[in-house]
Length: 195
Image 1 (cartoon, rainbow, N blue to C red):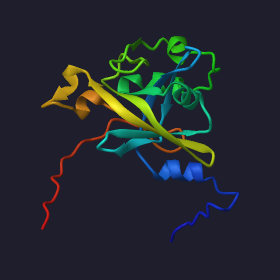
Image 2 (tube, rainbow, N blue to C red):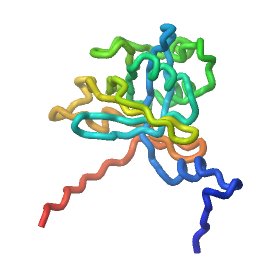
Image 3 (tube, helix red, strand yellow):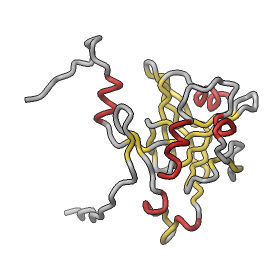
Image 4 (cartoon, rainbow, N blue to C red):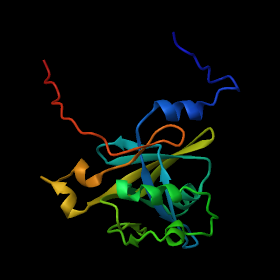
């Protein structure tokens, strides 16, 4: 037996359903700076890799939030990985701050200069991705933002054989409702060869 949710039915909330089914979702803790020079730091859980070569990542802004406004105005953003020790600060930065407020300053979150873009990254994050705006597409009540990756920075102690380790990143994820995912248990499976 299954329950079928018709997303065209006004009584059905597709957002609640999709965010409970498409899980876990990595969190992009996105820092931006507006045209007015005011910083913004907010978590976005509609986040993924969109293209490998050239490297492009994507995030979706549900509604026209400060992050989206800043990216469209300046053309730059940085994604910092939310580690387990940063979950409460990342959650706090999701509050509806006034556009004139800088969430990092308000919450005491240390930032540091990025290497190739004029937007700071979260200093305590084990890894970050520096981006230039590639393009943006309006989709209903949301905006899909594609960012051309210009640099990936990883704390040296978080690298093993030149790659970040899950043990060092300890990434948090978003699930449904008010649920967050702890760093995952890691297993290894070799990809099957081609016949």
